[in-house]
Length: 146
Image 1: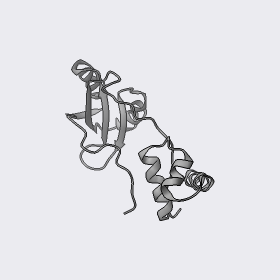
Image 2: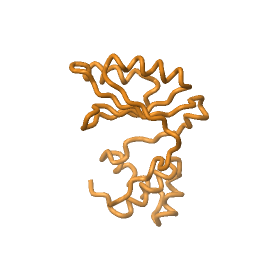
Image 3: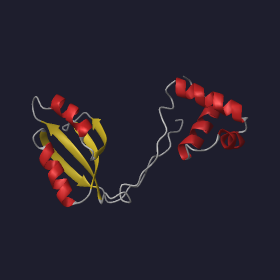
Image 4: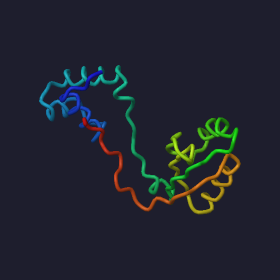
């Protein structure tokens, strides 16, 4: 689906606040509420909009640490890990990547002991490297036309 400039304006409104009403979006982009609704429906049907989510603060919900953990899987351990990683509550994002490491995970943890226990689970699958996130410089940046 080709995304025209008006659809990009609607997408920008939804990315800024997915709870915006169609009437509010319509006022911002200069079309009627029914027209906004129709365009959003087409964007959803085409898979351009894949869902709506609440952003939950890891810190305010009891997780004191956020970390990036990379995993270089041992021979024969990647497939079992790909199944297991989906069961870890600590993992909020996981990517299979190219390069020396196979996996990059974004995880949240209650404290250092929790981090230690989590790494102990991972080391049976491969070699890990951990970086503690100090702050987030860019967060959920809007996707815009290039």
